[in-house]
Amino acid sequence: MKQVNGNQRRMLIAVMLLGMMAIAVSCSDDGDRSSQTESRTNNKLQSATELPPHDPASAWKQFLTANFAGDQACADCHRKEFEAHQRSGHSQTAIQMHESRLAEQLLKLDTYPDSRRDQQWSFQSGAGQFLVKDETYPTMPALSVTWLLGSGTHAQTAIAVDEKRRQGVELRWSWLANQKGLGLTPDHEQYDEYNRNSIECFGRPMQASDVLACLGCHMTVGPPPSAPFNPDYFIPNVGCERCHGPRQQHVELAKLGRGGESKPLINYANAEQYIAACAQCHRDENNISATADPNELVRFQPYGLKKSKCYLKSDGQLSCANCHDPHDATSHNRTQYIQQCQSCHQAADQLTVCPVKPQGDCIECHMPAVEWTAGIRFHDHWIRKPE
Image 1 (cartoon, one colour):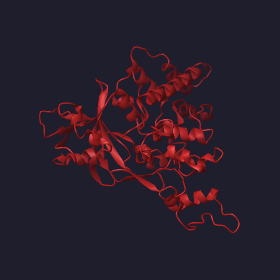
Image 2 (spheres, rainbow, N blue to C red):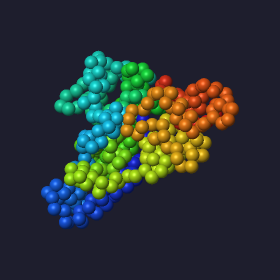
Image 3 (cartoon, rainbow, N blue to C red):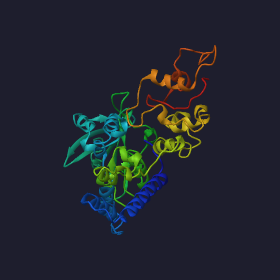
Image 4 (tube, helix red, strand yellow):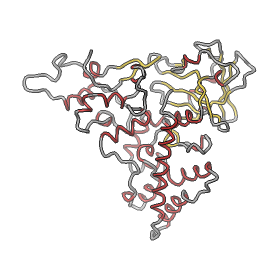
């Protein structure tokens, strides 16, 4: 599935890395901390600035260990938010394929026929790998599938990553929630014609920038372009630290009752900054094509919201968080959303909120679900008058 492009992904990684390193440098200068816990924290942070530049893989691994605490570390002090996040799709956006429930299900299949090609896929596992093979052409070696991406709310798509060649392939088949089974991965119609002796046999080829972009929006953080695409160099899922920045220092200081001294790397001062954070992956007008088809734009909620008069006339107050709990699963309580609309659209004297359907469904009329592909529907968040 399409994500932000490689240049944007590299820029996001670079910005986050530079910001984290700046924090490490500033904190390592504070030499008068007396407790062993504080010294250990400073040593971890300082080590990130002393890594050998010739070994980017080792440097990145040590950097993750020194600066990222993990979601579970947030639970002691932020239990409500932690439990809400565990219910959300963001907490389930990436899993290694061989560990997934879908892998278990596919191993029970004899074969799976491609819906548009003359191919039969078979699945096997072993030595910590999940393998897919094209049974129609048995001379083609089996492919090791690395990641399963997506929460499963709408779909889950598998990708195979070749660490040495720094490339990959998005598999032809995806699990589609509306079909409760496998189907063609969205946008793969364009690969119906393919080179049988190439990686196209399995799906959409991906260059290094494509792999980083695709994984980047399903991870808390991933390696810089110079490091290998080893699964150990990613922190899977969109966790707490994707939106709040690395918090290992905060966790260490919180144990001393001084957590407030470690300020978040990322702050949300206004609605524009909040939407910009969501748009890194959900996208707005800065990272989509102006010539994109309407059914493609439906996936990009920030793009739609920022076109809406509700946003344009909100004086910078309207953001994603007005209607969605940023920590929890997306609510399907339509009454709650209607009440949110009415909190701003109050009825004037002797008038109703909506003169067309006073008791109607605001969402259904003003922000209807639109089909993207394969029966998958999204609300595009472009709040508008019905045509």
